[in-house]
Image 1 (cartoon, each protein chain N blue to C red):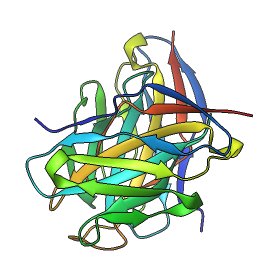
Image 2 (tube, chains in turn cyan, purple):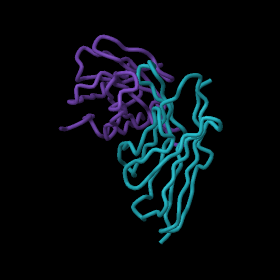
Image 3 (cartoon, one colour):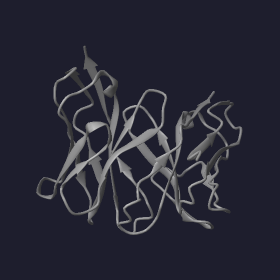
Length: 114
Length: 116
């Protein structure tokens, strides 16, 4: 079955600390992987995506993610968190010739302590 | 560019009423989708379309209809609203293509629907 798991429902980090949000997927074909961010009351904004090639991808707002095929993971990282990064983060997987269907994880809510 | 526009932003319906959630995009995207977002469940796909005249069911299609008569518009119809359809609904669109570097969904700002 195709699925995405984000093991951490809620994470709290101090401003300036590093961040890693975990994402594991189960997908029967070559995955296209995405991270989205959602601020309260807003829609989703694409942070970064992976299709192929370099397994470390850079995104907006200083985020990066690393695709590890052997671990079926696509973890999101940021070296130094800012208070404005507080939001909900969603990992999603789609595939080649899948009509653009995305499967989302349950989301991880990030709180930032001053 | 307006991107993906959803209307209305808020709606309250009585059980049994019908309504249409509107979605329009001005980016000439082939793919369009509807998702619902419920607490602790992420986003779940309701219906999707890979082009005008082509639609298919997603994970949770029951109680919803869609059509895609133009590239720009992808309305979602609730046939007979039920309290279980209380949710936030998101429309999204993307370029199609296989491995297209532009592939990646753009989301609307959502419609918050309450069914009483």
